[in-house]
Each structure stands twice: as structure tokens, then as C-alpha cells.
Length: 296
Image 1 (spheres, rainbow, N blue to C red):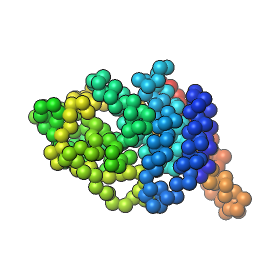
Image 2: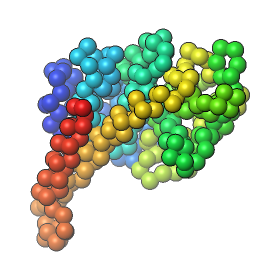
Image 3: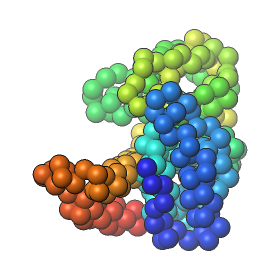
Image 4: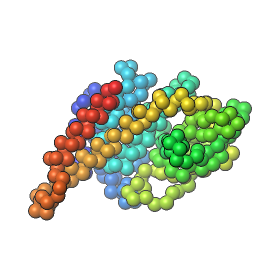
């Protein structure tokens, strides 16, 4: 796909050329391998962090406050080239968003600069938790309070943007205290194991694994919240809104392909109910609505 996207609304004069160049130079040559061979784009993900691609929505890393439009636009540019990688960007952004709202400043101060810069890559394991809060399924990981932290047992079947040396955030059920906690899990910690999931369709390169806990210790220094009842309302809107970057980008990429095919396939494509101009107009409406919400 054509990776060049208009992200001129972003304020950093240095960051924008870097991001567009990274997509063209590092990501575009890998897109087919990512989709078909399951290659995880680790180098690009790290480079995007070096170009400040994960910081825009994080108040602690921006003196002028959060700018969700910037974060969404960066994700949009990546997803226009490769949706799977755009999903990984969302995972990284979501992880930073959770840490931004940590109960203890020490947890935020330790982890946020690393995650926001891409020095530490990681994902989000909240799929199970969000289904739990919607009364669809129980929390799959249980923890027991011990001196200095918690001991976790159970399995999370789908967590993305992971590899050895990565981290992720998840919500755990603490039975003894009848509450739920959110904590950062380090993939190299004792009692934890990544296991390959079943094959996906075009998402093999998203670094998605099953996560197994067997008496795995989580220190208090990695606990984002000891009681998530007050945390979830603070993170839910941003967690959901950030996902628009993926949708906006992949739709634009599909419109790009339709336009590229005009000369060779117009004789058949002209019968399609939805033509590029109409889709572009609807996409622009979606962008405007997204930016309106982002500015709030």
C-alpha cells in the first residue's frame, strides 16, 4: 500500500518526516512477510518509539498535555501500510495509557519513559477483563497477596505485541480481598511462559501468544492499580478511541488500492456499489468525528 499519509496536523516538525520515512524504509518492505510469514516488525516498532510515535497521548511525556489526534494519526499512517503493525502500535499506546494512570507515581515514573520511548515494547491483556466487566466471561488469572506483591496462576489465551523481553498489562482477580488489580507482567519473570497460539489470518505478525502463569510473582513495583474499580473509568474512553487509528488507516489503504486499480480494472469495478470518491467522503466524516472526540 501507499504509506504516505497527510499527518501535517501533528506539531513536531522533526517527528513527522521521521515517521513517514520509517514506514517507507523499514515497514513497507516487510508488509508481505508480516502478513504471510508471521514476521514480527521489532526493528520498526523500536524505531517508531525513537521517533516519538508512542508519546503523543501521554500527558506525563508532553508538557502541553495529551494530544490523541496525534496518536491516532501516527497509528493511521502505520495501518494504511500494514494493519497488523498498526494493531501492535495500538497495543503499545494502550499500555502507555494504562501506566499513565497508575495509582503510584513510582510505577509511572519507572515504566512510562521506557514504554513511551519504545525502549520497552509491550502489549495489553485486557480482552478478558473487558469481557468480564460486560458479564461475558470470568477473569482467567487469579492472584494471591503475598509479602511485596502477588502470586499469579492461570492462562490468558490471547495477548498481542509480545515477544521475549516484552511486557504487558493485565487485570487479575484477587479472591481474598474481593477486588481486581492491574499489573505489568514481564515476559521473562519466573513462573511465566509464552506459548504460540493457533494460526491467524494475516495477524501472525502481531506477536499474539497465550500467556501461562504458574505461581508467578508480580512485585508491587509493577502494580498499576491495587483496585481497578476507580481505574477503569479513567482509561476506558482513551483505550477505545485510540483504536480508530487502525480503522481509519486500513480503510484509506483499501481506497488507495481501488484507485491504483482504476486503469486496469475500471471496466468491472465501475459496477461496485461503493466507489472510491464516496468511500473517501465517508472516511473524512469519520476522521472529523474522531478528531472531535480526541480533542475532548
